[in-house]
View 1: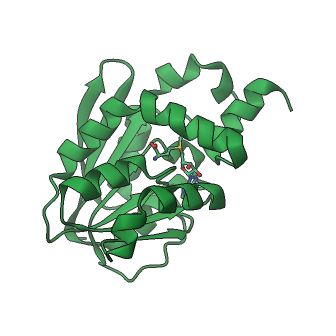
View 2 (view 1 turned 180 degrees about the vertical axis):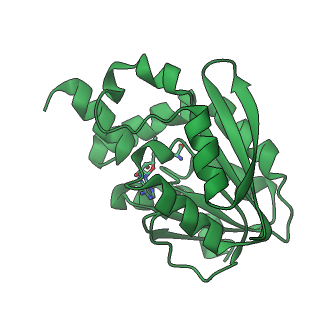
View 3 (view 1 turned 90 degrees about the vertical axis):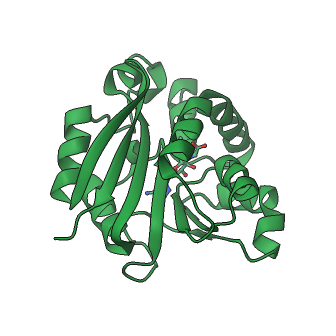
Length: 205
Ligand SMILES: C[S@@+](CC[C@H](N)C(=O)[O-])C[C@H]1O[C@@H](n2cnc3c(N)ncnc32)[C@H](O)[C@@H]1O
C-alpha cells in the first residue's frame, strides 16, 4: 500500500501507532469544527448525548469537562476505543461517560434514547449514509438534535489521500439525505468553502 492510501485509511479507521498520530493531527485540523459542533449542540446538564466515531475522544473530553450531560460514544476502531477510554478515564469511572465499539448503521440503543447526537468528519466513511441517518433518527427523542460537522466536497476533492475510501457528498446531497430520513435541516458555515455543520432536528413523522 502506498503512503497516500495509508494516510486515507488512517482517517477512515485509525489503527496502531499511525492511528494515534493521525488522530492527533485530526485534533489540530478540526478545532473549528469542534467549536462549531459544541455551539450548535447547546448542551445542558440534563442531556443524554452520543458521539458517533469519537476517534481519540478529544472532543468528548472537552465537552465532559464543561457540561454535566451524560455522554455515550461509539467507534468502529478498537484502538481508538482504547485511546479515548484512557483520555476519558475519569468521566468513565465517575459514570458520566460510556464508550463502546459500534457502527452507526446498527446502533445498540433503544428508540428515543438520546436528546442530542453529533459526529465530526465521519460520514464519508459510513457504509450506507441513509442507514446511518435512519438509525440516528430512531435513537433520538422527538424533537432531538443531530449535529453533523463536515468538510465540503470541494475541499476534500483537493486532498490527495481522499481519492479512495472517502464518500464525498455535496451540501445538497447531505441536506436531501437528512430530510428524507426525517430531519429538518439548517446549514451553518464554519469556514467558507471548506467546512460547515448540518444542524438537523428530528421531525415528528
Ligand atoms: C476522521 S476520524 C474523526 C474522529 C473524531 N470524530 C474527530 O473529529 O476527532 C473518523 C472516525 O470515524 C470512525 N468511523 C468510521 N466509520 C464509522 C462508523 N461506520 N461508525 C462509527 N465510527 C466510524 C473512524 O474509526 C474514525 O475514528
